[in-house]
Length: 252
Image (cartoon, rainbow, N blue to C red):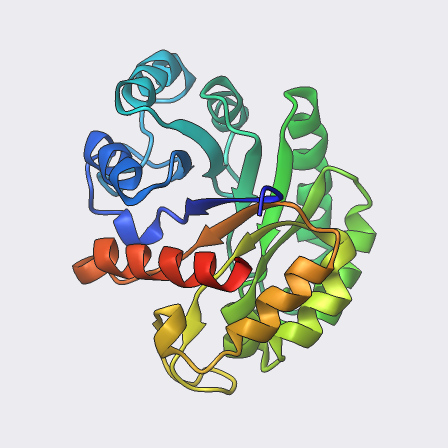
């Protein structure tokens, strides 16, 4: 379907050097990359050195025929992280952290997301925040947080498996609840149903009903990225390739 295109979370590829990551994703059949900002001593693939290196990163992308789509940073990252993400051509700035489920945390995180959203808007970026347990364990939690933030360019990164694993919530029901605040997706499966049960795995090997999940996505007005998130570094190339084939089959 022309409504959708594919990317892959950088997490499973975190031990790749950046040029190898770019070439590998292109060979798999993905040319819009998800990336992450990192410290000098961080994962090999992470973007290091700040916005002064943006042109070097763009050259690396161009040499492999890929482009930046989405880049993750920490919520407490600095303004130069935002500038770097915009300067390499990303459309999305992703936040993926676990925050305590307390009133104090809710206020602090919502205030920070509102501030980040305004800064990101000035650079033409959309902020996407991944449901990852804690303050964002369930669809109800997510709806409350985004209502409090109250910015059109701060949206949910819907992660199907995270809803069941960290919140004990069926991902189909979660999708129906959060569709209006969703701007991006992460798609992986899990080996067992239940709160903190099982391990994340390939879509075709997991227990999530991906036929039902994808039918809900197709039947909605969502268009844009279907982002794979195979997480195991030891077989991430075959796992990501496998998940890409699975999703293509489901949407065709």
